Length: 184
Image 1: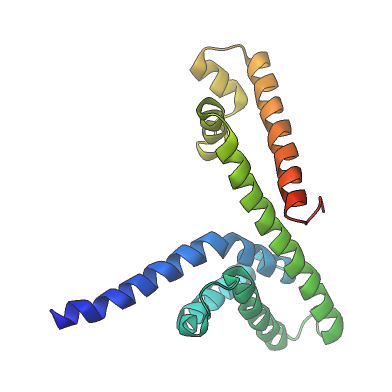
Image 2: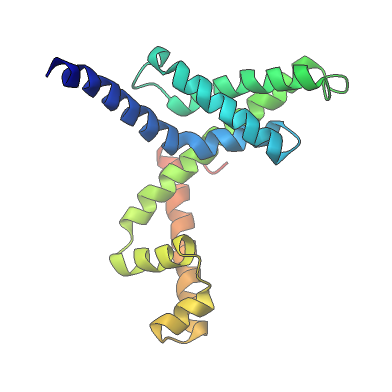
């Protein structure tokens, strides 16, 4: 019985790490991708970053910004990459690379905020409109295919989707503004 009690905190910690990592993975990867010349290198750095995040998760303070923590670890992995490759460092100073890194990190965090705002705005849509967005972007159907599936005219479906996009765009801008982030 004691063995099961010992395993539970580890399982809860594993689940918490996975939840946080999956919620922030795209933003961290986007940051990495903005700092290295190839997707293959970015994939390798992402894997190294994820491994280090896992290894250091005990050091992470719950309630703080997991995405920012991950980007910081990624920044160090990117610096290791550049020092190993020794390319770009001959052409770009370390100081300039750090400035680029900071700008990219800020953009990634803003993108993450935009995704959170989008999720909030999607939750405000009625079920019918949420289903249309889901069919379009999660199932990957074209607007023409959606119209065929719903037995509706394609021109009308294009108008409906255009209105949904406009509505979501306005909602995101208003949400970000309410969060004090403006429309950057």
